[in-house]
Image (cartoon, rainbow, N blue to C red; front, side, top):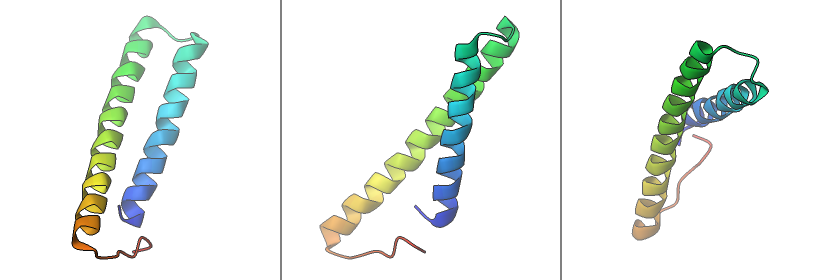
Length: 72
């Protein structure tokens, strides 16, 4: 993952955490709960995609014996 991907991943995780807290509080309407849940599912899918891409990249690097600069 690049720095931009890492920032997006971390930002997505923070946003997901806030959604979970909001849903757990239970002080929102059913409609708002459904919208928040839908947004959360989208964030989870995006995070899973980014993690899968990072895992694939690591596997390729290990197979090739190459190194990578994680700060780029």
